[in-house]
Amino acid sequence: VESADWTFAIKNLIEEISIDVTAPTATETPQETIKADGYTAEIKWTPEAETFDYNKSYTATVTLTPKDNYKFAENIKINGCEITVNEEGLSTADGFTVTYNEDGTITLTKTYEATAKAKITYLTPPENVTLEEHYASAEDVIKTLPTTVTIESENEITSLPVTWAFDGTYDSTANAEN
Image 1 (cartoon, one colour):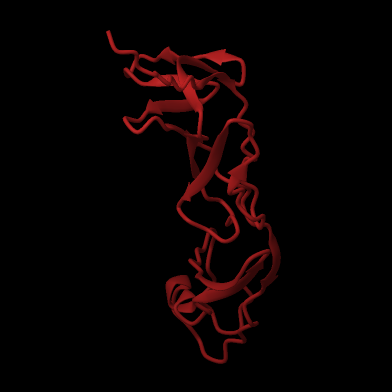
Image 2 (tube, rainbow, N blue to C red):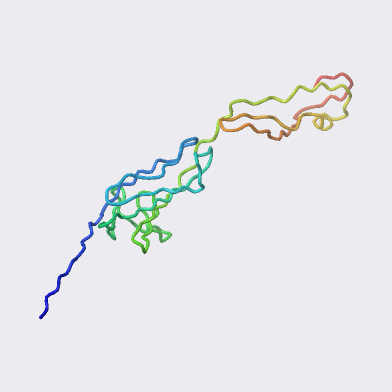
């Protein structure tokens, strides 16, 4: 009988992971990584952004890759939560959808609520209009009024259309004030 030397590589089992993804905040830079022991955690955002925009929802996709000599347990806990299967058949834990990949990685996906709406900082009022001729109806007067206003917000300056309406009685007599 010949003897043989056998070498077994025993991998450290990761049974629980702690994932702390900072929720999107308008004008902030997206988080890209999470510090971890035994694995790396890379975050990709959809839609991609150098800074988060106002009034937009973002989805974080976190890819967990075990380091050499480590592997993830099949029933891993995420932030202390066991993975469950929801009514749509998706594996979830602590608000993340969990996918075990064939290459030994785990993908966590979470969609966050829309970031705050940009606040209007200034509204440029339409220019005053002095009517120098007589109009038979309020509708005819409305046709002469400005069609846009300029709005400045925390992130942009834009022109928006204006819709004018008349709610009342129009006096069509010459020199009447309406």
